[in-house]
Image (cartoon, rainbow, N blue to C red; front, side, top):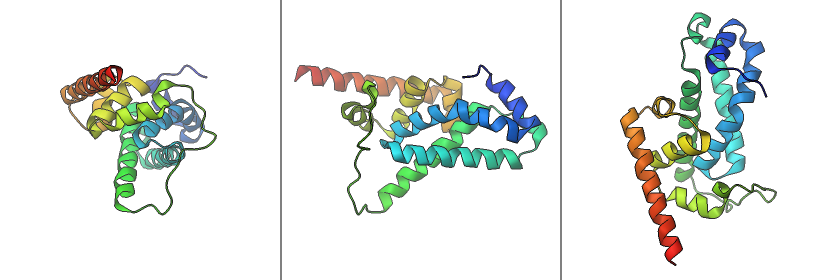
Length: 179
């Protein structure tokens, strides 16, 4: 793994997009995958959405003036694209009926507690803004400014979404402990 700041990566992308883009993919794709997986609850959809997001990022960067790429808040901008793709996927999925029941990947081994069915159910109980903010903050590790930029919401609103989402998760877990 490399140690390169997003500012340095933006500079490199502005100089030679084709040479620097694989580093952006290496840095962002695992984080995008896990964020989109938490958002959709499905690993195979998250893989597809991650690829789609990275393709759109590449195309947008290719068409963006090179002298302005360095000024981008790159990570937040990439997350904005990925979250919009995830939201579109969720909206489209609710509009069209599924012919076959969607199931989890049979070879889906992930020992993290956040990937268990119980955690997916808990996260699903949050409103979409709360779930998105909590996942981006505590699963992906983004800061409040990056979450605000990625979601298009004010920082204070993002903080409130995180606070309320965590409070709701705490209430759910306490109720589970009582049973």
